[in-house]
Length: 450
Image (cartoon, rainbow, N blue to C red; front, side, top):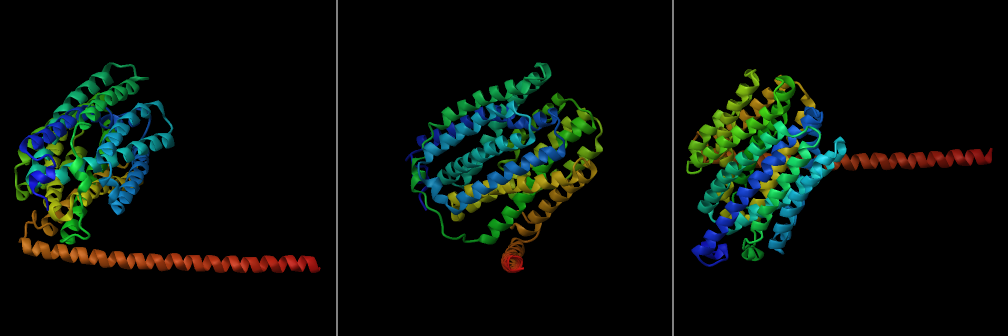
């Protein structure tokens, strides 16, 4: 393991400070860009006639494409360790430029394809950003930079959502999203300029362990994080259509809800960043109440307050997953940690999309599923993650090993059964082709002879 300053690759505290400053400034400009583009994307889809099913389809296609790309990189991590700076800046710029084209189309499949392209670029970019942070910093500094980036991005999100709400309210309906997304893209490219000054040269020499020392911990944390993010993604898919279509809330109210949630997340980042895992568990428990509050509050304007509560508590729950990987990074490795975090995010989106498509506009069922998903995340953390568990850590560690080993055995059995099933299908298909061919030959000969 490299020493702390050697890993940072700049040799002194000044280099460390410069790296952290550039990463925080990048987040500052990125926050405005994200709030004006991806932050308003669901509102854009609803405004052009999309229901929950259509939004879910777009998320399904894009998350599947992103998951495939991230999985390929996970299997071939050497992609990360060559020309790191060039790839970081290249995908950073491509992600932003994609938003120029999204508001110009209306067809469901076309929207899905362009947004999928954006998600692929975003996934690769997220891997490189995480790789830079996890590869150059230790656990304490990872927590620090994560909290600061989150808080600064929240501040710039407020500016972005404020601009977005103003433009949504006063621009002509026909062209407002073209103007908003284009403005977001231009502001986002400023963060690309800033990221081009980051020194990541030492990452070219980064290695990665051949196997994880404690795979059961990574598995339990990943399982928890997928369920938690799944509930968050599903919330995003359902809440805005419910507010605008069922409760008849205006689009600027939906944007105001995002704004208030962002305000809450800034405060939450500062409040929760220094807390222990046991304290973060409280936020996880409270966050499970979010879907029930949304369902039982009938006034659209009151949902702005509900958004404050859900964002504040979700930040704590999200920090559990992020901080666990910061701790595991020392022996799991920066390369695999950064890629796995993106895979977890994409997998959560992929699973949430068909659920959204399945229940459609059955909002009662949707919020019930959301509550159950958040409750499941709470149970997983309380029993299977030693750092967060309500039971003794050694007992939680034992349960984590049992969960991991049973999952591995179940996976291998499923793979073997699937393999035998596929082979069986091919054997039957081959036999059918042979029999059909023999019958064809027989009929042909019979016709010729007679």
